[in-house]
Length: 236
Image (cartoon, rainbow, N blue to C red; front, side):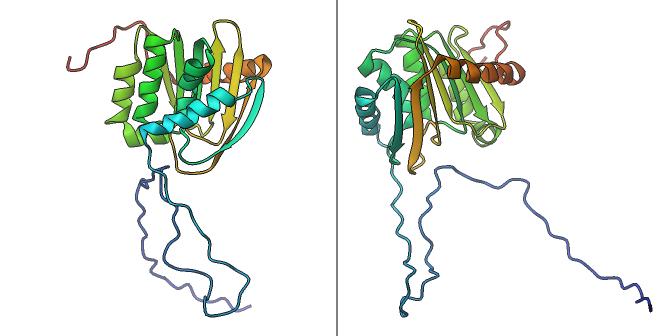
């Protein structure tokens, strides 16, 4: 077999950015093009996309309404984009009288409003501990503004612990002073993403302990607050 001579081929270098700027509140509206030729008869219809919802403080009413109606034994929900998942713990305390003791929360991202809601629980609702497990994505995008705000507002009397890791889990564990163990799992981050979301809510101590064991292991490895050192006031 005749061997072809070696040929040098110049291959242009392609450079990619180290990071891609993303936002999980992105507007997934349809671009101005279509696979459908509207002048022809076709069975394919151009998709209709809902407009993005804009957060309004009045949207807390949706969490309030759900807290009033929810079955505490077991509930499965599909919620619209103006439902703020992070409002639900405070709404359950306010409108169902749940006396929360400990909260574990894993989420990709959260908002300033979610931080404020957690602060209300720590200061006025007898919550003893909040453990947050947040994503590296969230840290990389908000380390100069929302992350410092989170520590400043929630690091109260060693009641907060925060871990950052490559998590995409959306899990909320709530233990009450009376010994109830509530588990919420689903697609929703704490803040609104203007999307349809689903979650399951149930009282289940066995499931609670299963997730808690995983949380405790990850938080112990990736925790960011050293309780042996005093909190330093901002500006010092």
